[in-house]
Image (cartoon, rainbow, N blue to C red; front, side, top):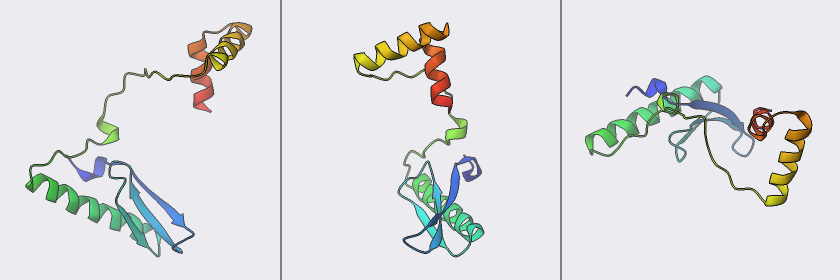
Length: 107
Protein backbone atom coordinates (compact mmCIF):
# COMPACT_ATOMS: atom_id res chain seq x y z
CA UNK A 1 0.00 0.00 0.00
CA UNK A 2 1.29 3.44 -0.96
CA UNK A 3 1.00 6.29 1.52
CA UNK A 4 -0.07 8.37 -1.49
CA UNK A 5 -3.53 6.78 -1.27
CA UNK A 6 -4.25 8.07 2.23
CA UNK A 7 -6.50 11.06 2.88
CA UNK A 8 -4.49 14.12 3.89
CA UNK A 9 -5.72 17.52 4.97
CA UNK A 10 -4.00 20.72 6.00
CA UNK A 11 -5.77 23.27 8.14
CA UNK A 12 -4.85 26.30 10.22
CA UNK A 13 -4.45 25.85 13.98
CA UNK A 14 -5.31 29.13 15.67
CA UNK A 15 -4.19 27.68 19.00
CA UNK A 16 -0.71 26.79 17.68
CA UNK A 17 -0.40 29.65 15.20
CA UNK A 18 0.69 27.20 12.50
CA UNK A 19 -0.70 24.96 9.81
CA UNK A 20 -1.43 21.40 10.87
CA UNK A 21 -1.18 18.39 8.59
CA UNK A 22 -3.57 15.52 9.29
CA UNK A 23 -4.26 12.06 7.90
CA UNK A 24 -7.81 10.68 8.24
CA UNK A 25 -6.62 7.06 8.41
CA UNK A 26 -4.28 7.92 11.31
CA UNK A 27 -6.31 10.34 13.47
CA UNK A 28 -3.73 10.39 16.29
CA UNK A 29 -0.99 11.79 14.02
CA UNK A 30 -0.42 15.43 13.10
CA UNK A 31 2.37 17.76 11.99
CA UNK A 32 2.68 21.48 12.69
CA UNK A 33 4.53 23.75 10.27
CA UNK A 34 4.65 27.42 9.27
CA UNK A 35 3.34 26.76 5.73
CA UNK A 36 0.69 24.45 4.28
CA UNK A 37 3.27 22.76 2.02
CA UNK A 38 5.54 21.99 4.95
CA UNK A 39 2.63 20.72 7.04
CA UNK A 40 1.63 18.34 4.24
CA UNK A 41 5.20 17.15 3.72
CA UNK A 42 5.57 16.63 7.47
CA UNK A 43 2.44 14.55 7.95
CA UNK A 44 3.31 12.45 4.90
CA UNK A 45 6.77 11.76 6.38
CA UNK A 46 5.27 10.79 9.75
CA UNK A 47 2.72 8.47 8.10
CA UNK A 48 5.47 6.88 6.02
CA UNK A 49 7.53 6.22 9.17
CA UNK A 50 4.56 4.83 11.10
CA UNK A 51 3.53 2.54 8.23
CA UNK A 52 7.13 1.26 7.94
CA UNK A 53 7.20 0.57 11.70
CA UNK A 54 3.84 -1.20 11.56
CA UNK A 55 4.94 -3.26 8.57
CA UNK A 56 8.18 -4.35 10.29
CA UNK A 57 6.27 -5.25 13.46
CA UNK A 58 3.72 -7.28 11.47
CA UNK A 59 0.88 -5.02 12.58
CA UNK A 60 -2.16 -4.47 10.36
CA UNK A 61 -1.86 -1.28 8.32
CA UNK A 62 -5.01 0.85 7.94
CA UNK A 63 -6.63 0.65 4.53
CA UNK A 64 -6.86 3.92 2.63
CA UNK A 65 -10.38 5.34 2.56
CA UNK A 66 -9.99 5.80 -1.19
CA UNK A 67 -9.44 2.05 -1.61
CA UNK A 68 -12.35 0.87 0.54
CA UNK A 69 -15.49 -0.37 -1.15
CA UNK A 70 -18.71 1.23 0.07
CA UNK A 71 -22.10 -0.39 -0.44
CA UNK A 72 -23.98 2.89 -0.42
CA UNK A 73 -26.04 1.63 2.49
CA UNK A 74 -25.90 2.43 6.17
CA UNK A 75 -28.44 2.24 8.94
CA UNK A 76 -29.13 4.94 11.44
CA UNK A 77 -31.53 4.92 14.35
CA UNK A 78 -33.67 8.02 14.80
CA UNK A 79 -36.56 8.89 17.11
CA UNK A 80 -39.94 7.71 15.82
CA UNK A 81 -41.20 11.30 15.61
CA UNK A 82 -38.31 12.23 13.29
CA UNK A 83 -39.05 9.12 11.19
CA UNK A 84 -42.70 10.13 10.92
CA UNK A 85 -41.76 13.70 9.96
CA UNK A 86 -39.40 12.47 7.25
CA UNK A 87 -41.96 10.00 5.93
CA UNK A 88 -44.59 12.76 5.75
CA UNK A 89 -42.21 15.15 3.99
CA UNK A 90 -41.23 12.43 1.49
CA UNK A 91 -44.88 11.63 0.77
CA UNK A 92 -45.68 15.31 0.26
CA UNK A 93 -42.80 15.61 -2.22
CA UNK A 94 -43.76 12.37 -3.97
CA UNK A 95 -40.37 10.74 -3.36
CA UNK A 96 -39.19 7.81 -1.28
CA UNK A 97 -37.94 8.48 2.23
CA UNK A 98 -34.63 7.07 1.04
CA UNK A 99 -34.35 9.69 -1.72
CA UNK A 100 -35.37 12.49 0.63
CA UNK A 101 -32.83 11.57 3.31
CA UNK A 102 -30.11 11.04 0.72
CA UNK A 103 -30.76 14.53 -0.67
CA UNK A 104 -30.67 16.03 2.82
CA UNK A 105 -27.38 14.29 3.61
CA UNK A 106 -25.83 15.54 0.39
CA UNK A 107 -26.27 19.19 1.41
